[in-house]
Image (tube, rainbow, N blue to C red; front, side, top):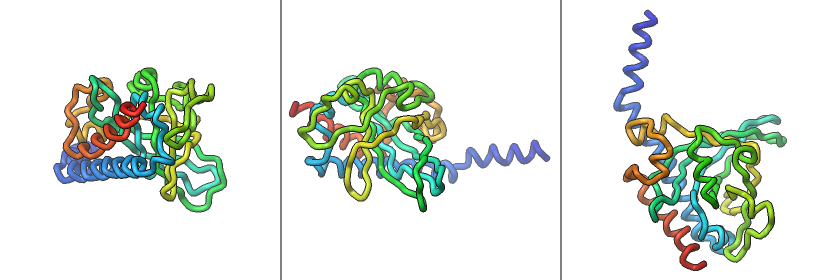
Length: 229
C-alpha cells in the first residue's frame, strides 16, 4: 500500500497540469516583480539614488513579502534575482526570504521588497544555498531620492541595500536577521532541472520568455544610473 501511494504521489509530481500550475504562479510572481520595479522607475524623486544604481551588481525583488498575524509572527516571501553578467543582466534565479517579526501585529501585513547588491561579494553570497542578512552578508536600509548619496559608513560597507514599498511609497527597510534561500523547486519548474545558481546568475542560462519585461525594466532602471553617473 505504501509503495502504491508513493507511486501515485510521484506520478502527480510529474503531472503536466500540476507543473503548468506551478509555472503559472511563478510567471505571475515575475510579473509582480516587474510591476514593483516599473513603479520604482516612475518615482524618480523617491527612487534608487543614481550612484547606487550605477554600481548595482544584483537586483532581487520579493513581491508581497508577508508578515505574520501574531505577536511573534513570521515573515515569508518568494522572489526573483538577476545579476550583471557579461555586460547584460542574467536570467532570473528564484529565492525565498524568511525572517522573524517581533512587532505587535493585528492581521497579516504585506509589502514589496527590493534588495540591491552593490559589490561583487553580494554576487558571491547569492551563490550559496542560504545566507543570513546582517550575518553572512552585510545589509543596510537604502536611501531614497535620485540625488541621495550612500555616504555613511554603514551604507558604504553594505553588500545589500534594502527597500520596501507599502501603499505606493518606497523607503529603506531593515532586514537584518532575515535569511535568503535558493528556491530549487521553482528553478526546476522553470528551467527543467535544478540548475546551480552560479550558472543562472553567471549569464549562461537563457532567460524564460516570461522574464522579458522584468529584465528589460531592470536594464532600463539600472542602465539609467550608469549612463547618468
